[in-house]
Image 1: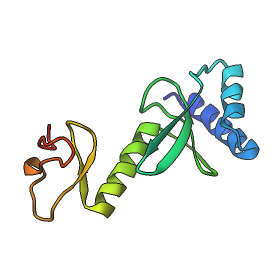
Image 2 (image 1 turned 60 degrees about the vertical axis):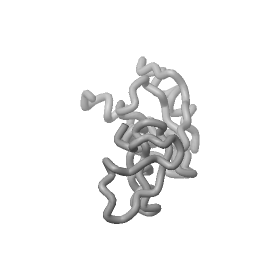
Image 3 (image 1 turned 45 degrees about the vertical axis):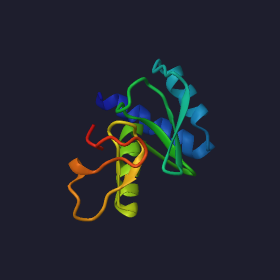
Length: 123
């Protein structure tokens, strides 16, 4: 992302934080000609975050989880939450059905069968 766009996203983050509103931040960016697809939300492992949608999973954007606002990508947030869940629960995400399944200690993940779909988690 171009440096001035990152600075504008930081300004939008500050507006969102000050007003507790992603909508106001999106309007600020729209007024600058940085048009979005609106506000979207994603839920993973009992956590939810909202973000200004610019069309790509890994585009920098203004994100919100609870009362915390930051500039980053919602795709990176999803990966981080999934990884934390897998570490905490001793699980692995199935590449075939997308569900989490237990991974027994010492088991090679490539030989792990998903308890939901019956396929090897590696797809």
